[in-house]
Image 1 (cartoon, rainbow, N blue to C red):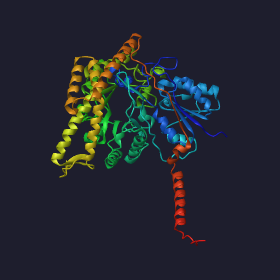
Image 2 (cartoon, helix red, strand yellow):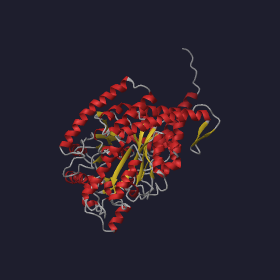
Image 3 (cartoon, rainbow, N blue to C red):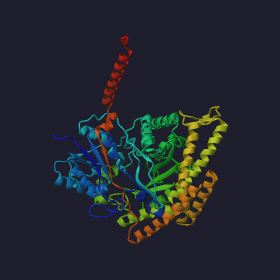
Image 4 (tube, helix red, strand yellow):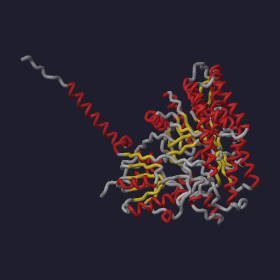
Length: 599
C-alpha cells in the first residue's frame, strides 16, 4: 500500500476578480481594504494574510505534507503531479465554486487521490452536491488529521514560526512584512447568533496553546527564527482566558521581552482585566465587537463603550470597532442612528458587515424557521453585499450594498484616514505612558500581578519592564511617523488635514525633530502615493472600486524529521539513549588504565 503523502492547499487565484468561479466585491484576499478601510482609497493599507491554519496542521503531522498557499490554477495542477495520496482543500463559502473546480479536476485526472475538505466552507448543507470529496475535516484540524492518519492526536503541539502578511503596501510603497502570527485557540463561548466561528465549534473554546508559557514559547521561536517581536493573535477572544494572559505577561517580565500583540477581545473581558493590564501586556490593537448602541449582546451589556474606547486609545491602544448592519431592529432611521453612533465612538478603525445568516448559526436557524431565507448563491454570501434573508424594512437588495458602502464613506469623511488615526493613538499613548511612568515613580506605585493594578508599595526604583514597554511604544510610534505627510497631502477634507497637522506637531513634541531618514521616507511616501493615486483613478474609470492586488504563491514542504520534537515518546526515547551513552562514556573514563613500562 502506498505511503500517505498529503497536499494542503488554499483555493486558486486570481482573487477579487469576477469570473465563472468567483466574485470581485467581497472576495479579495484583503481584510483591511475589503472590510475595514474600504472607501479610503489611497490611505488604505494593503495586505493579504497567509492561510495560517494550513501551516499549523502541516507542522504537526508525521505524514509528509506540502502546503500550497495562494496558488494560480497552473500552480495547483502542476503540484498534483508530485504523487500525493491525499489532497486537503481549505475554502470559505464564497469560494465554493473554486473548490468544486479543484475537486472535479482531481476526480478526473487523479481518481485514486482522496479529497479532504476543510475550512468554513464545509458548513454548506448537502456539501457533496457542491464539492465532491471523500472526507470532511470537522473541528480542530491537527487532531482530526492525526486521527485520520493513525497518529497520536494528543501529542504535543508545535506552533509554527510564521510571518503574517504575504505582502504589505502603504501609499503604494511595499514594505517587508515583519509581524508574526499566533494561533492560541479556536472558537468562542460568547455564541453571538451570527458568528460562524462560535457555532462551528459548538460555542466552545478549543485551546491550542493552553498556558502563558506555551504562548511565550511560540513568541520566542518566532523571534529566534523570524526576528519577529509583534504578533497578530488569531483567537476570537484571547483574553477570555485571563490566567493564560497573566502567565504570558509574567513570562515576558521574567525574560525582559516586551512583545506586542494585535488581538480580538470582547468589551466585558477588557473591563474585567482593566486597560492598564492590556497596556502592560503589550496590546497595540484590539478588535471589539460593538454591534449596536442598543447593546443587545451580553458581551456589551451595561458597558459605556464610548468611555471604554476613549480610555483604550488615550493609553495608546488602537481600537478596531466592529458593527453589524441590518439587524432585526434596524429600519431606515435606526440603522443610520447606529452608523452615526459607532462613528461617534471615534475608534481608529471601524468594520461594517451585513447581518449574514450562515448555515450552522442561530441566525440561520431562525430565519429558516420563519421561511425568510432568500435564494442567494453561495458565492455572494460574503457579508459585503445583499442580505441572504428577507428583511421586512429593506426589501430592495440594492439598499443592502448602498447603505453598507455609505457607512464606510461616512466614517472616512468624518473620522479621516484610519492610518492617521492609528498614528495619533500611538503617539498620544506614548506621551501618556511616559507621564504616568514618572508619576508612579514619584508616588511609589508598583504593579500588583494579583490585582492587576498599580498600588502603593513604598518602592521608588524603576519599573524595568514598563520602561522597556515604553521604549517599544516609542518604536511603534516612530514607525508610523513617515506616513503623516502623505496623510496630509491626500487628505479627503480640511478636517482630516487639520488632524494630520496636529499629529505632525504632536510627534515633534514627543519624539523631537524628525531624523533625516524620516524626512526621506515621508517624501518617498508622498511620491509613491502620487503613482498610487493615479492608478486608483484609472481603476475607477474602468468601473472598479479599488485596485485588485494578488498575493504571491508560496509552497512549503514538511517532512517527519522536522517535527520529531512534537512527539514526547520519541523525545523521551532519544533522551534515554543519549543519557545511556553518556553514562557509558563516563564509566569508561573512570576505569583505571593499566600502566605500561618503557621498552
